[in-house]
Length: 294
Image 1 (cartoon, rainbow, N blue to C red):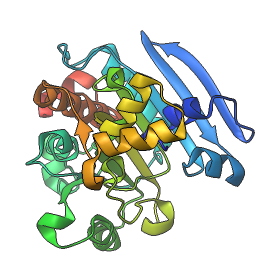
Image 2 (cartoon, rainbow, N blue to C red):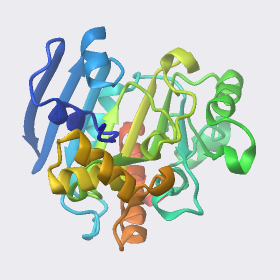
Image 3 (cartoon, rainbow, N blue to C red):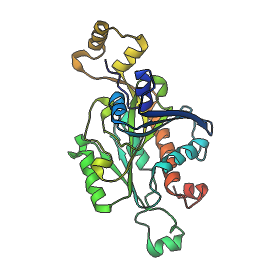
Image 4 (cartoon, helix red, strand yellow):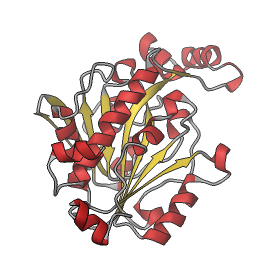
């Protein structure tokens, strides 16, 4: 039975071996544990069921603990995001997900706190001292059930109009382990499949479909119930797996598990990621001055 996860490092763990065509390294920076996985070949991509590219996984202290504005997490995450972005040009930041469903609200809540600067120009920018800000546009895409429009279609329309040099998309993810919920951030240059974490695959949002680099940032907020049951019970027998599937997913209903404090987790994750994105984008001003604008 397939264990559902959006985290590349967990997919590597499930294979239980080093994969030829994929590089993996670990480092500790600023008190944070950072795993880097780069998938180079088509074979490795097929084995890991992940597109070729770079995946950076940062393990954090629980986000349900307090997040200070300028702590090490902000600087470390901002530096990782900055490495994947082009140096110059307009950047579009898009929050994916449904703000009315708490575990899926990470994207919209993050986007609402990212500093939009594309409209600040000319004499207004010079007179207010904001002429050093990088041009950033921000949007929430909603979900197809609300808008009737595929997220990818919506982004394509905006990209075609404003022509950014890159897109940052933020979305909630699924993990295979409870201990990763609210304690992990994944950053990748491979884009994202909206809804994949809960089995609702939509059109991929990546460089091939959008025409510009797409940086995906996510925090796991849910665990697939069947995946969790398999891991907790350590079941590998096919017959037992089928019986467990029928119990956990009656009549094929897919279920997910999320922490009881998920509202706090999502709020603090959104705050941390938005601060990190602002830090990554606005390199010409001091962190304290940036925070004063938010």
